[in-house]
Image (tube, rainbow, N blue to C red; front, side, top):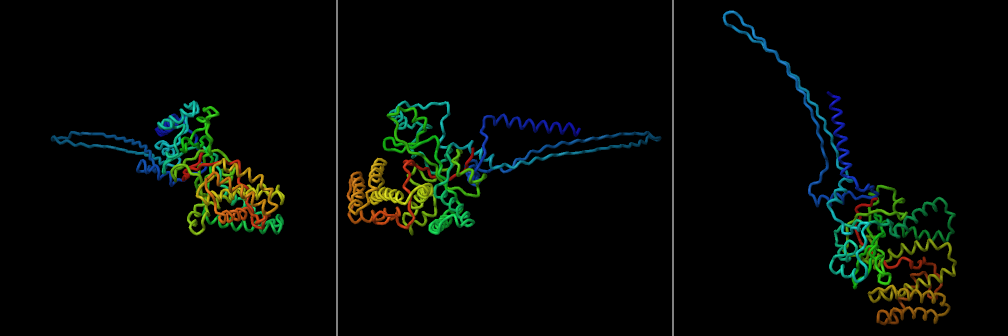
Length: 460
C-alpha cells in the first residue's frame, strides 16, 4: 500500500510540473542582475492588496480496519448469555508541502497586472507612417502608439520597461578609476613624478568628497536602444527607430538620443558590478518615472541639489566634471604642452559662448554651437597678442548676440571671458596655468534627453 501511495504522489507531482510548463510556454527566461525587492512588493501590494507569502499543499490518507464477533449461548431456564469481541485499528498519514513565494514570482505577477507606458511594437509589424505628414496626423489624434507619443505622456509614477545599454554616469566612472589608481600608487609610488603625484592627490581629495555625496548609490545613464526624441510642431516626441526609418530621408527630423537615468543601491546588485556597468551590455530595465516628461539635463549626485544653495551651480559642475575628466585621461598621454594649450583655448572659447547664453538665462541651439566651434578652431592659434585675443572672443560674442538678438555690457563680457579662461586652466594671455585643465566637450555625443526614473529591476 505504501508503494502505491508513493507512486500516486510522484505521478501528481509530475502532472503539476507538466501543467506549469505548458502554461509558461513562450514566457521569457528572466535572469536578474539588479532587483529592488521593496519596490516590487510595494507596487504589487498597492494593486492587489494582501500579498501571498506562503502556499501550502496538504495530502492525507486514513486507513481504518474493524473486526468483530458475536457468540450467543442458550442456557437452561430461558437464560441467555451473549459475548461480543471487537477489534478496531486506525492509521492516519498526512504529508504537508510548504512553498514560500519568492520575489521572482512576485515580479512576474507584477508584469502581468501592470502595463508599462513604453511598449515596443512586435518585430514583425511595420510602421504605419509613409510620410512626416501622416506621422503628425496620427500624433494629433493620439493614434500613434506604440510607435510614437508625446513626452508629456511620461507622467510621474508610470512604469517604463525598455531595452537599454546599461552604463554608469561618467562621474561614477571617474571615481572608480581614481580608486583603482590610488591602490596602485600606494603600492608603486614611482609610477608618477612628484608634480603628477601632487595633481593626483587633488583628484583623490575630490574623489573622497564625491564618495560622501554618493552615500553608497550608483548613478546609471542607460542609452535607450530603440527610441529617440524628435521635435514635431514644437513638441518633444518619443519615436521608435523603425518608424523613423520608414520615412523618406528628406523628411526625417533630427533626433536626440534618449537615456534612462536614475540611482541604484550598490547592495541590491545580484552580479558583479564591473561585469554589468562597465561593458555597455544590453539589458531590459523596469523603472518608475520620477519626474514627468523628458529633461535636458540630469544631476547624478543627488546630495549636490541640497548643497546648491550654499554652492551655486554645483550640480552643473559635477555633471561637467565626469565627461571632461574621462576625456582628459584618455588623451593626456598623447598631447604635448603646445597642443594642449591650443586645445584648452578652444575649450575657453566654446565655454565663453555658453556663459554668454547662460547670462541671459537661455541655451544655444546646435547650429550656433557649431558656428562657435568653427570660430574656436580657427581662433585657438591666434592668441599671440592682446588685440588678437580680443578679436577672437569678440567673434564668439557676435555669434551669440546675433542669435539671441541681445547685446552684452562690456564689463559683463570681460568677466565672462576671464571666467572661461580660468575654467579651461589658462592664464589671461592664453598660456597654461598650474590649475587642473578641462578637456574639450565631446562633439560626438550630440543633444540628449533624459527620463529621470527610480530603477526597479535590470534583467535579461
